[in-house]
Image (cartoon, rainbow, N blue to C red):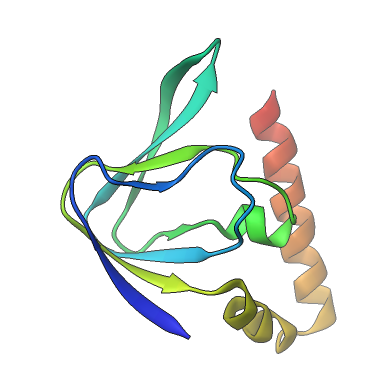
Length: 112
């Protein structure tokens, strides 16, 4: 089941290392993505309207790889891991495997 969330600038959506499996769709606004580098936050990207957040952690069953903070007023659609999983299960097995493999490769590449 999806739920709409309103966020203000500076609100933290997820923290690096968190283990929750919630997925978010950015309905409006912009989010900044940070990783911990030598004990300090380093901005590594942005997430904008229409993009998803949290898919990699969900599909690879791993902790969050970054901290995500609202850069402006945002509206997100919060989708539970269970709901996302039900949708994934409707895909052909080869496509499920492709998506999981792709996410793992992206995660490994991001570690470099």
